[in-house]
Length: 251
Image (cartoon, rainbow, N blue to C red; front, side, top):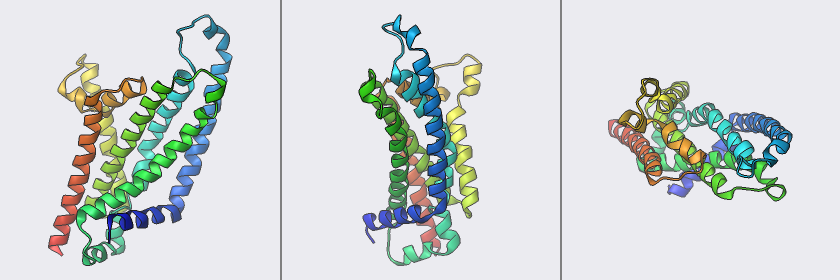
C-alpha cells in the first residue's frame, strides 16, 4: 500500500466520522459569531481610528484576533481528531492487518498525519474565508495576515504530529486525546514560570510554543521560529514511527 493510499484511506475515515463534522460545524459557527463581534467593534471604532493614520487596521483588529481564537480551539479539536489515528486502529485490531500487508511504519504514520493535517488546513481555510470576504472593502495588510496564517498552519501541523505520536503510544483513543492535550498545554505554557520570575530569552522560553507563534501573529517571520516547529514535527513523527516499528517486531 502506497503513502497516497494510506492518506486517502485515513482521509475517507475522517470524512465519514460524525465527530469530525460536528467539530467543524460547532467551531466554524463559534468563529463566525466571534467574527461578527470583532467586525462590529472594528466598525464602531472607525471614527477614533480615522485620527490615527498609523493605528491598527482591519487585519490587526479582526483577522489576527480571529486566528488567535482558532488557535485556542485547536487545543481541543486536534486531540479529538488525532486520538483514533493509531490508537483506534490498535483497539479495533486493524493495525496488525496493515503490518501484514507489508506497509512500513513510516508510511502508516506519515499517511495518517497528512490526512489529519489536510483536514486541519481545510478548517483553517474556512476561518480565513471570513476576513478575506471583506478584503475588497477595507485596507488589507496581506503581509501580516500571511504571517499569521503561516503561524497557525505550523501550530496545527505541530499539534497534529504530537497527536499522532500520542495515538501511537496509547492503548485507547481517550488516553491519546488526554495525553495530546496535556503535552500541548505544557508546550504552550512551559515558560510561564520563567516569565513570572522575570526571565526572558532563556532556554526554557525557547521551548515554549507561544514564544514562536506570537511573533508570527504579529507579522514577524523568523527562521528560528520556523525551525522550532519543524523540529517538533520531525521529533513527534519519528517517535511514532519508532513505536510502530517496535510493535511490529514484537508481533
